[in-house]
Image 1 (cartoon, rainbow, N blue to C red):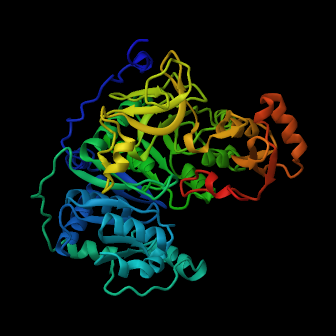
Image 2 (cartoon, helix red, strand yellow):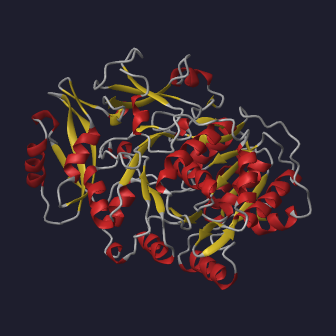
Image 3 (cartoon, one colour):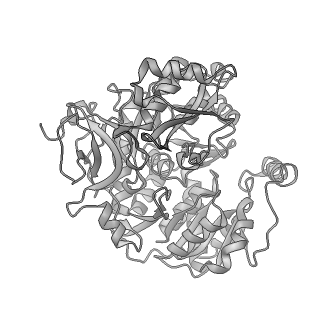
Length: 554
């Protein structure tokens, strides 16, 4: 088979390779883009907008403030908040000051926070006050000396900011009391930062680590993936290359960002890559409230968006979607978890936009493959992005024939440096030749399109036959009375394991018999669910990924 057969499917203008040295560091990239697009709108949140020039200035102040508090280049600072204007300011300020960012899920329990902060040796934190109560419980066990708190409405300004904070604190009671000495408000940190000059005299090379991005911990303890300047610059350039064919019209680029910026998907795709074209990123603070997304669709002429399967499914079923003008939409991107065929087809019917599914991991900064414009194949994760190789290997790590099922491996400049303080885990994950073992089971066709069959650890073994939950979920989701579905394997005395599905109904009349009859039409006998449970909702991560592990034992 020819090397990189997928390159012939790259749209015109997409290079086979990017130049990872186009920008030596992510800081260089930020400075250039903030100057190039100075007067364009960069980020908006609840209608409040900031230009690239404003973000540039405020991030300088924030970085200078951290340095004045004794935070030095190479130290770690945790960012723990939902999508707010404060996030890009704090992020860019840290990058400019040579500080390593530790993105932290604000919904973490105190135990999870303690692990991440002690493992990464965090010295300072920027935290939304909603979650400061949990920080109070563990801060004494960490090295954190500087705590900067912020409120949801702090940068919204005027009456809007005041009303927002009043609603969050007094009406919704979403801010538990806390007592952490010597905290500083975000706006005060910016104000104090004006008194100091940002020091940029520190070592900053392509191989310098700038982010500790923690994995979900689904296969054990959560590990900090060390992402370097080169990793993130490379992936930003790769993303820019595959997005550009969609950007042919001479219009203002407005990209919806419903996924949290602390997650690697939105971090790279929305926060970094969209800066290349001077796009406005519309931040959604609470994507679980789909009405807030509908509101932004009505406020802006959105040209693109990122999302996950459950988000697109939720919007498909939202009664107000049909009243939204989506004629300006150029692209919709999906990742994080498998995009179900039924959801993709319904979205195209509702909006006229084809969702381009991709694949990536924290360890690949994150994007490794994507469906190209004009060549979207629903049910696949597309083809590798520029400067990236992917292959399928057997259990011994040897490449196998086209069409055969095995583990997906990835190689490219976006592959992480390794796991922080875990050389053994790094050695298990990255081979001596630089191939990353993804833990995902998949196959490649003759054109170089890849398909995920399932996660290695989620595979179900029924009497020696491999059953992949994604396939079962895809079939069940086709039923018109099903809203959401998750599939796991449960122990069975006769066959070792059997298939169990958890279903959220779209139509209350749905029953087990209908599901079984539907599955018999599309699945061979051993794949048909033997156990069916109906639920009001399914457990999900903050980016909307259904958490199969939390269904075990139910």
